[in-house]
Length: 144
Image 1: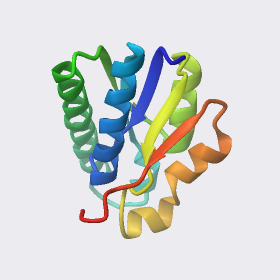
Image 2: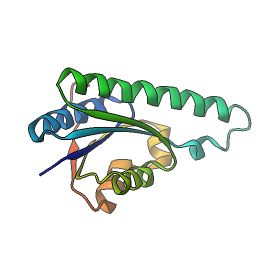
Image 3: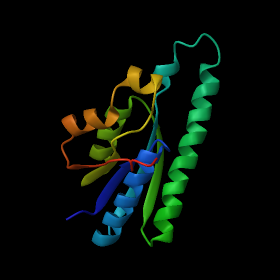
């Protein structure tokens, strides 16, 4: 049923919960797991100074977040691929789905907090509304 599974991550606890589900699904279907982190540099472009530094830090964070997914997938015997992309998060996720023949997206229901969430809106909600493939949403455990 599923041969290509996408798990977008932002390194948050909600993403971690989704990663567990995505790995389990990939193992069950013998599917390839794709870990995607999206750097939205436009959100920080209004900074007068230091926008490049912020974007570089986010790219580094993205490499670490996707590496953690790849490590967890390898521990579970799941084949994986990691990507750090730049753009608007929900659009980049949709583009990735189209370019990589993704069958299902697994995402957390809570990611960024505070000002980021207020300014950017809910990425998961936009993906659910606009995706052409099924989206499995995973709620962050209440104790986190």
